[in-house]
Image (cartoon, rainbow, N blue to C red; front, side, top):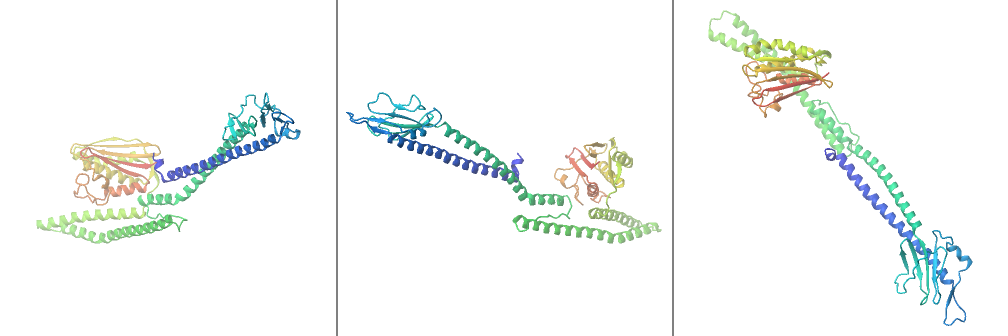
Length: 454
């Protein structure tokens, strides 16, 4: 049913129906005109021969009562088929004659027409006949079989069907080409919009129909894409510049707080203030580092290395790092790791794995479980991380990869969390040409699936 929802198929169907209607109407009109022409030509031939028969009727001299006799001149015999074929025949009834006079090709069962007949032609079965009643008791009839005329009309009908089918076929092919050409700008717009939606703001739509309505739409969209590209570029540049500028004062804060803690400070309140300043400075530095990393990923400054990596090995190394943290909360980790080789940057992929495993442990119940698996199928490799935590609310699930977005259950605001971890993970995965998908139900845990081309 999706095919019939397509604009292309709708146009093609309507064009085909219109073409069928036009060809059918034209064919029916031609068939009707030709049929009437054949019948009219046959009628004219009958009338011409009927006049010859009328001229061949002569009075009998000195006959009482007056009578007529019929004599067909030799030069007129060629007008009638004397061999019983499909030509013309005649039958003559004369008043006072015992039997009608007939040509050798005349059917034996031709009935004499009624004198009261209003028309002087008739169609009798497969025969077309014309007659003349010059006097009471006299009748002249000429006829011919219609099989030949009907065969010609039938051949014409089949010719119209074949010609119409050929015209319909070429018309549909031409219509399909025209529809394809007319809708090409729409396909270009859709393709460019899809790429822009995935983050490629450099895309522009190329169209030759600059003067048409679609060409005007293309110009508007290209202008919109250019403004979006400029806005995001400016935002990324601002983020990177701001992070760079903040690095120095944060480093100064860390240095001063460390010096304060290292000095012989006996005042507990002062020491507590230095420790709070140090924790805040560390948090700000992590935030700044995350912002710089996202800015570099957005700008494409850090293209991932393309070296063969095994997701199973990377996941095993990540598990070694998070097992101590999991043991503190009584969380059991179950791993099903099979070889999953893919091209990529091992350090970046390790960052993805570590982040997902850390989240799976931190956002879990005491004594919960974490399941980690890798697989390889259909030209892709996948890493699946699932926990038994509180899960992610339905309204929060679509936004968990947004920067600085926090959900009460899925992304807490505990110490050390900047709200950028999953955003960085998604950016790294996308830079590898992969995808990151999250699935969860409140109270049922959460599952994160990383899919990469192999």
